Amino acid sequence: MPARYAKTALGRSEIQSRTHALSRTARTLLLILDATRTGEVWVSMVQGATPADLLALLDAGLVAPVDEAAQAPAVPTAPATASTPSAAPASPDTEPFAATQADPDAEQALGRAVGVPATAFTSLSYSELNTRLNALVKAHLGLIKGYRFTLDIERATDVIELQRVAMRLVAEVESARGAPAVADVRRALGL
Image 1 (cartoon, one colour):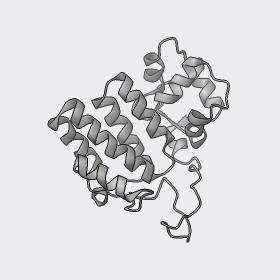
Image 2 (cartoon, one colour):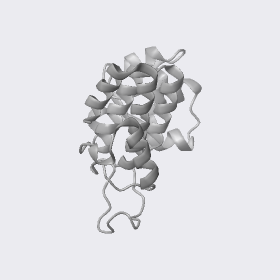
Image 3 (cartoon, rainbow, N blue to C red):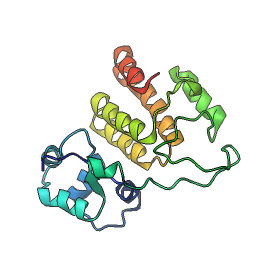
Image 4 (cartoon, helix red, strand yellow):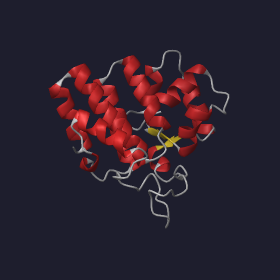
């Protein structure tokens, strides 16, 4: 299986809802799989996983080859709130980082603590930010902390939630790995 695969919208929601009866190895494979490696490599990284686990994810529509995953329907967005314009809600795959946040005081305090003002984020789409965050977590955090961040990334339904995870990641990498590592994270996030 030399192709690269990515989670579909259904696959991202499956991580939270757990509606499919997946084996432990298939569920683990779904959790960690992204387009940075081939399906064969991901299968080899999960102890006990076989190509049949990847095929089960494909058959259920939870993952798709990268070219198909890019065309899969986006995760539905929440209805517009008072802090967002009511005209045509943006898709999480196209909406850039927004300066509006659910709790601006808490977000600004976190941003100041890690030296990342809320307006500093570039216009990365949901998909781009999701991919970059997953790569940064794998590169800079250990197994347990990385797993927790991966879960938070997968739970994020829009760009604003991913922005919160990104700000926490900057703080975590700074405390765990120091200034050189956090500089790499900031550069990758466009900060």
